[in-house]
Image (tube, rainbow, N blue to C red; front, side, top):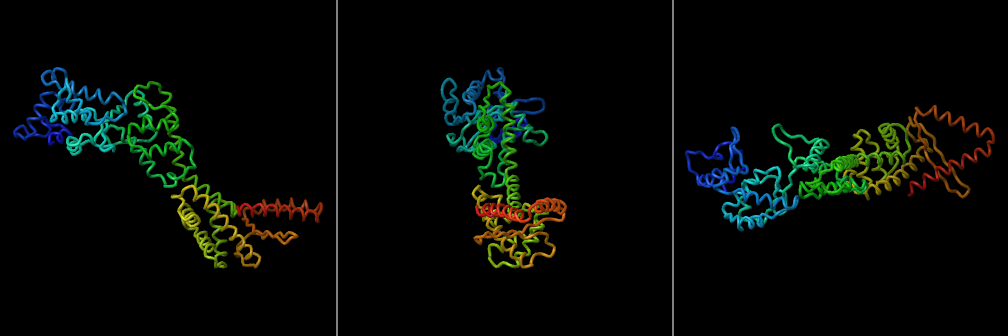
Length: 445
């Protein structure tokens, strides 16, 4: 096993770190299995593990066994081959490899094809096949699988495009590997807010891509089979030649990843729009928050009902950053912060917000009628009573910046009333009633 561990080192010294002056136990195995066979080769100033040349293999004959390993794993690209069954094949004629040598040949094959094969232990992908893992493999080969996933042909083209789209970068001196791309995708999804992992308010493509990455178990299968399927394309097989599907797939995948990236900001925008709708105030969202905080500061002093009071206290806190303010308000109304919502929480937020806003507006109207509105408040209180005693009321706020537009509308209404004051007032009352009635029904729903 120490020889196998040495094989997984850099292999720069002639004897894999073993001093020629000393005779460790693994020296004889190194000389007979690696050195004499040509598996350990010198290239310039360095040594590396690789398949021997024909001349070097004439005496020892390890090439047929190595080729059989390659043949078995390549028979079904992207499929896993159990190591125990692979060992069984090598024991058969005409190969007849002994049990003690088989792990060494597999190790040499794994090192020579480290970018083309993947190993799995108990169904889980192994980031690295090291000496410790090989020690377990020799004892229980049935727990391990090997998979051939060479990136060549159209897959190489796809790989290069994904590197650009995902902006994958590695340290100098190291080539980008399959796992670098897969890791980038998995980390991207893992770092999304929980809401994005919970919601169904995404495009079907984005949902499929999200779930495919979350359930991924095999790197090569994820990139070349499962993600293309999720995006509506056929698997990118090793022998594929057309490049149009690759370009279309990468474009679709990028669009799906963008949908996932923007899902939570879009939720926050819906929350802003819903809050602005129930309170009906102009300006930027920060200006809206500042104006609403002043109104809430006045209302909170007049209420004892716990839920409305707690709601007002959250509206008053306009010093919080916008995202934190939305998290605070959403957490109170839906009992969970928006970043962790399921879709049901967004529906609950809309319902609770409408109810709290109705209560807020009612209290504000009473204060306004009693002359207890904020000193710098700019607005009017509307109250329409039908003959049956049903009444609707609302305080309409406006800003100084809207004064000119307001005067223009006022002039237009005055011109209508000049034509027929009595019926004009009745018509205006009906129009206002219809508008207030509509708002009341919306808030109730």
